[in-house]
Image 1 (cartoon, rainbow, N blue to C red):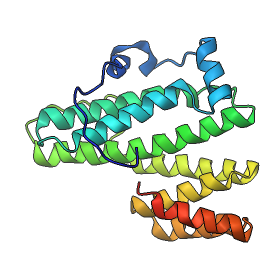
Image 2: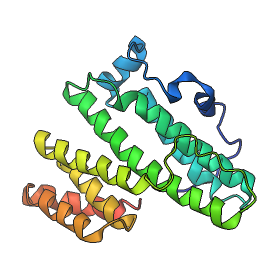
Image 3: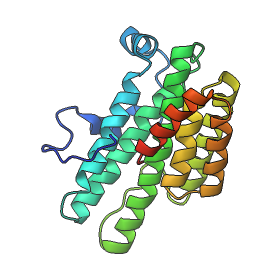
Image 4: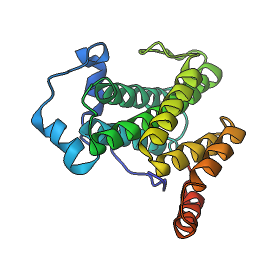
Length: 213
């Protein structure tokens, strides 16, 4: 996801947008399949996290298309679908081991980025395509930044509690790259780097230079 590269056939056959017309918008499936539960433990990356990552890739891919109400509207749909997929994981109560906690943290981080895109895309629709129909399906308009900050605050708190230094670095870098609050971002990065040995700190600093989103 760090390198933008256009690809054809939006949605790629994954049927990601079908969730927009399902009960999952309003309901959380607590009785999940064994496949979905096992993926979080065996792979550290749950099915919903992967689906949301593809949605975010679709949003970025559509950035390279000529701007139109239809294209921007499709971006909004992928943002909404990604957020709904993530909510299925974030509303579970079984993130009680190392692997599932990592997946939960990743989902929080993904949610923050999709909220950022959601605000950006909705604003573009309002400003550039005034006659376009806007469906704020999740009723997020005007609340994206507050929810984004809540995601990253929770990420930071859990990272400190369970000593996930890399996630602290990722959150700090995102605060800076998305121009949310550069001071907070620098403080988070400094705090995380201080916990590392000199050799690990060198590696972490190199990683930070490669994170562009």
